[in-house]
Length: 148
Image (tube, rainbow, N blue to C red; front, side):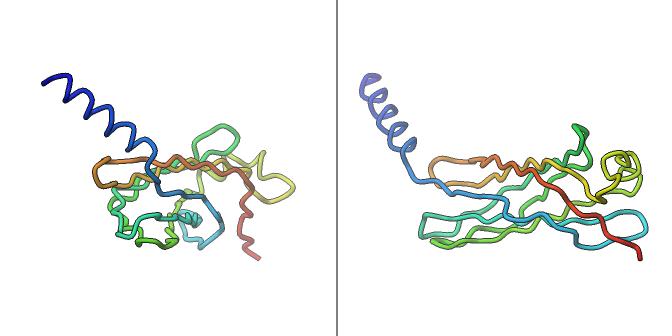
C-alpha cells in the first residue's frame, strides 16, 4: 500500500512540476506624487495567467534599495486576483520619506535621480499546488520631482 502511495505522490509531483505557471515582470517604476512627508512612486507589474480561471493573489512584498541601502519596504495584503487567460497589470505604491532621500544626496547629486533596485515577491494561490511566489527584480533610475 505504501508503495502505491509513493508512486502516486511521485506522479503528482512530476505533473505539478511541469504545469504552466503564471509569469510576471515589472514593466515600469515612475514618480506619482509628492507630499509634505514623502515622495510616492508607482511600480507596475504585468502578470500573465495561463489558466482559464481567476487566481487569487495572497500578497505582494517589496523592497526598494539604492546604493545598497534599503529605502522602503512593505507588503500589499490581498491585492485582488489575476484574470483567467488575461494579462493583469498590478500597481504597487512605494512611499519614500524625504528623510531617506536626504541620506541619498550623494547618489542624487548632479543627475537628479536615484539609481534603484526593486525586489518584489508576488505570491499567488495556485489550485492544487498552493501558494507560489514569483520573484521579480528591476534595476533602473527614478527621476526626482522638481519643485520649480
